[in-house]
Length: 334
Length: 287
Image: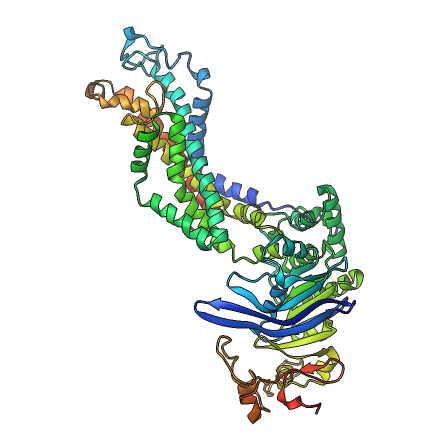
């Protein structure tokens, strides 16, 4: 594995058992995350973006399991680790979580334990992974809170979550995630629950944190604007598969997959006339537990061909690691 | 950065104000304090020894020497009443703490791990639940013998299901909270999540249950001692004192002998119920 790659997913497949049905949440996902860069994972609800991220650190619910593929991680010390082989909730994976790969969640309101002071919640993570005294931990937490723009951090350390606003709580969550200085930060829709001005602040904050610590970020979102703003590379997911992967300019300016194109067309733009209708993708996402032949997007695709109904498209790589799963591009670029 | 000082709004302080405004709860608290102070500081309030008997002064009416008079073997009733409170309270409170401990631990484990562990613990609790508690207690007292320590153990062993149910159901809903996922994502271990993060979130209803079950166990002790299966007869408890009313002569002729401990029990149970209801209004407004 290349030295500047910190995380590599290969043919990852995650399934959920729901009653007797098997739901294929993540299907054959492969990507590489380069050190110090931000990878965006975008797609509509239920396309498997969060499950992909949760699979990386084995944070799946009880009925979910990784059935195929591998997750290779390069630790801070430079060791290569095979995360998918670790026992769920075992000691090995717990040492990775928080310390090497940290995560922030969608809803900062619900992500903090209401009965503990926010400072001690951040410090808990630090004390879990490093052998330092409580006093040192407090000093480090206060310093980090200050860096993250929380006024009077030494006082606010002793406040409870209900005394914080949503944006402040998300700052606290970022502090919790960053306190051990992890290699990778997985942000699972970090700004969805926040209003727009706070969104911008939080995204900028994450950007600064990345610059300072060299953290790699996986940004999961359904917001194309956030992807364009923050990411270096982007993976577009549909029905548990990455349908298009490439550098941000490639995917946005030269999108290949009909799904990506449709997705970009359906983003509302400021100044769109009242009379103009916002484009949407026709149909709905199919049931992930159904077996299907051919391309998953075929029923909703405007450029579907006869072959799409029966043969599943493989990955076609065009120039510069710009890869797409579509029959339109098989056998050379178009 | 503003230098303005902001006033800390403590949830505990807000809850306390709410509690203080509740008159019935305050009455309960006062009753409780009176009963507890009388029992704990019993030697201050009487110069008589509750075990000292003098057959020459049987069934005396209340007088300045013996505030409530004397019982069938000439022991001072007032002394027995307040010393008896000690044992009744110890049994009630210790049993309530015991049941809560067992219930909380099993509830946490059951709710957090789910699956087979949960199924087994729930089955066991249902076995306990399907017998009337007093019947189970009677059987166990039959095996273990009388005595206040035995009584505490038996009450704890048979009464844990109520606390267990409360904690389990709370943990089941807490398990789906994002902050539990967030803890896991930070590499915090299962035991720590269970007891340090989830448990404190369930404590409100547990404390309410603790107070209300104290009242229940005081009553249970009285009932068992009344039928002669509770605490050994020489130890003064409210139940043992009421036991005297089994004699028809006493019941008819010497009402103070059984009315006094009866009122003590009623006041204490009433007090703790008011107090517990007040706590419930504060911690568990959904009820």
